[in-house]
Length: 110
Length: 115
Image (cartoon, rainbow over all chains, first blue to last red; front, top):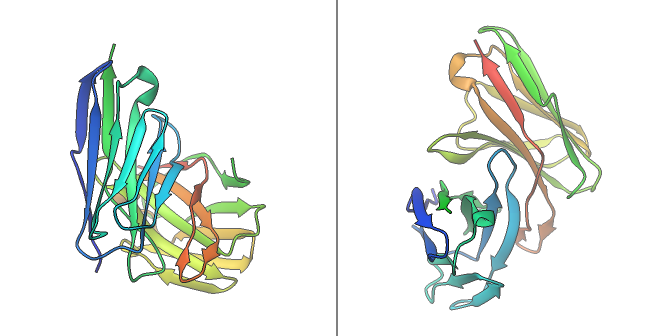
């Protein structure tokens, strides 16, 4: 079945440093979604990418979808303490149901 | 936030007892999902539903059953709880969009402890 790998599992940064998490699929995806989960909270949708090579920005967050539609990344510029949480990608391929990666937990040290 | 509630929010039970978790939505979305979240494993799909009385298994369905008798309610049952089922359980909903499902909206979660 479809597998979605996400790395790294954890990332410690100093406030102001950049952060990137990567998502790789074993199969070509029709779309990929990104979610953020704050500590003690529930996952919240951030964005969806559909087109090959697509790049979308939300303030300090930049999302990319690979040309082959098998990988994606989320980059945060100049992290803040409010960015703390776990970031999940969810890829949708042949199945109707998306497959979630295991998530990357971002820890920001002030 | 989307109109999704989960009950109970916290539960402590003993091994071997049956447990039912409830997910209720007010959005009239077609798809409903149950996930469990454990450290290091992310979100793992237990079961999902694509309509009333239409359900299917996810990757970690052993030991769990589900039912959906109304659009708004999706029940998850642990017939005989085990300590390995101690976890945080999330319900999610989504609508269909062409040949795929759309954004998922998650409930607040239920923390289940099996002693």
